[in-house]
Amino acid sequence: MERTTATAFAMIVLVACGPAEHTGVPGIAANVPSVERPSQPTATQSQASITPSPSTLVDNTPTPASPPTITPQPRVQNLLSPEGPWLVYTNADDLSFAVNLDGSGRTRLPLTAADNMAAPYAGSSSRPLLALISNDYSNELGPLLDILSFPELEALEEIELRSCPEVIPGCVIDEEAQVWLPLQWSPDGRYLAFVAAIEGPSTDLYLYDAAQASISRLTSGPNQVSQFAWSPDGKWIVHEEVSHFHGSKVETMWAAAADGREIRWLYAPEGQIDQGIAGWLDDDRFIVYDQGMDGLRNLRLVSIEDGILATLFPGYFVEWSYALDPATGTFAFIPYIGAPNTDPDENGVYYVSVSSTIPKRVDIDDAFIQGWDETTQNFLSDAECPNQGDGVLGFTVNGVVSCVHPRVEQYSPDGKWYLVLDEEILIYENSGRLVGQIANSSGRLIIWRPDSQGFFMVSKGRVDHVDIGKGLPVLVDSDLGFSDMQWFDLGLVDPVWVRK
Image (cartoon, rainbow, N blue to C red; front, side, top):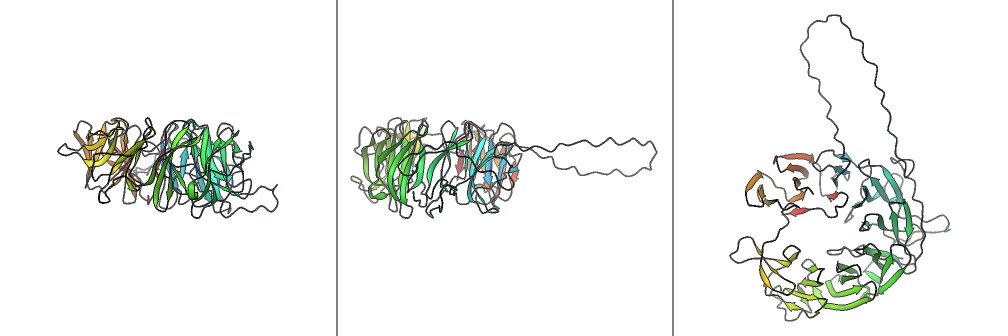
């Protein structure tokens, strides 16, 4: 399979696929860890024993009095907590670290994520395992898939992602075989899906079984596997098969069974254009669109069982202003080419659904779509409610417009606190009572703790932790740079962000 540069999907990343035929080759041995890793992939490194030195004999001989001295005490090393969650990030020196819920225990990971990865880390939701793609420059092995245990940071697996087997004489990895694609754990956290070229010159789709510490190959063929995504029930991996990564040459969309028993042909994209998944309606159906140089277009409903079911909207729509209600299959969007009765001087808001593919206009002018709010059952726009405080205009799946007061991003996960970011950061209870403030702060990125008892504040190349009860920033790292930061915890999928 050939490979091209991976394209980022909008909302839910589309799974890319490899070529057609299926080969179930379970039990491919993972490579033995290299320098600075345990000598055996699954061995736990032994800790050196510490023998206490003999006690010093007591000397009762009087000694002249001397002024008291203050001996500097070594800083106590805070360790990573055994239960998590942990915040993982990479600093300006490309070194990866993990810290505890409260910012303590700053510990360097033995590996550093590869550069330019849209999602450098992937944490299992059922086991304390963190997967990342790294580069072993010392041994010139190229991209490696590394799996670390937490909090011990033991390197359990190290897999070369570009390596021809010795049983294939003269095997040379195809230059198109790009393996720097986001890693994705199955919904139950047991299986890690990844793309690699380790049994031939082109890339294929592989699974790492965390329970059995084994690898299986799901696809094979001369073309490349590109973007991919799990079905909600974890039974299928939808993916692209590409013949060429330059110009988004997507030949076919496939669904590979995670148990290795079947690879199902879905459809061939018109014009070999790259695909993106807007969202899943259930374990079988999802909404897909074409994504090319001119933007997003051709919104369709696809079934793993039956292929393309319907075209919801054939025209172009704004790529950063759409939302889906998966329960009803209603899609809100802003068309700009091929839209019915759209005035080019205003942002017309429309919606379609799997039950009605005729686009309908919403009575909201000059606005963009912020998302679907499950709590209020409304699509949210960025248009403020006239004369109604901090509310925004929203609309239901039937197009009914009203003023909505959603729980917006600056709220803590439990909704008890919210922040106002200005020249300073103001901390409020949800009742509106001011409970704290951080003066002279230019923080523009906030990461809430999952337990809502504090947050991390990123500004000017540093990250601080703020405890809601204390309200004082405590330095975590002063050399942050531009970094992907994400929570890693069992059962925790998405980080909670606030952006100014």
